[in-house]
Length: 217
Image 1 (cartoon, rainbow, N blue to C red):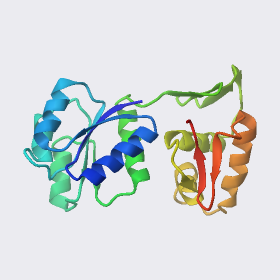
Image 2: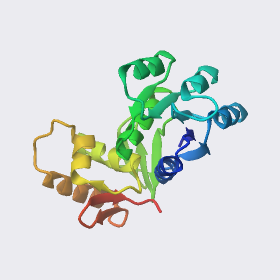
Image 3: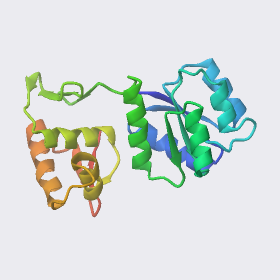
């Protein structure tokens, strides 16, 4: 997974982002001001920097101007007016997210940027199950397991958000698309198929009154 720097002076938000990035498998480092963010970015390679605009020391915009231009950046900030968005994107940021945000949206935006810069996971392995995201193929103990496109999409959604509890609506939105008009019980049917095909009865867990979670712990 990726090595990500979080530059955010609000400690609860910084810690929330760190905890969720870690849950899905990334390595996260924390900076609390612009000076520290630049020092940390200069001292080691990061696949992505999540950057607040209103940082002490140097602002997020100033940090972005001083960073290696090849370092991917997502601004995560309360400053959501058009001029700020245009300034951030004009500086070369890969994305711009306005607070408050849904953590799943943040994770999805992170994954999208990592894919664009070829820093995202290309495969996934767990309990003899090997998933190749590039070829959309799944193997169990070396034998290929045919999955329907929707089954693979659901599996990928669970993997990308592993160890997080996802509601049926969230799974529908990410695996089926926002315009899906079917019943959310279709999620239950596909979950049962994945559990059986991939021997993941204990890994794909039902979260009472919420939905499902792929546990890797």
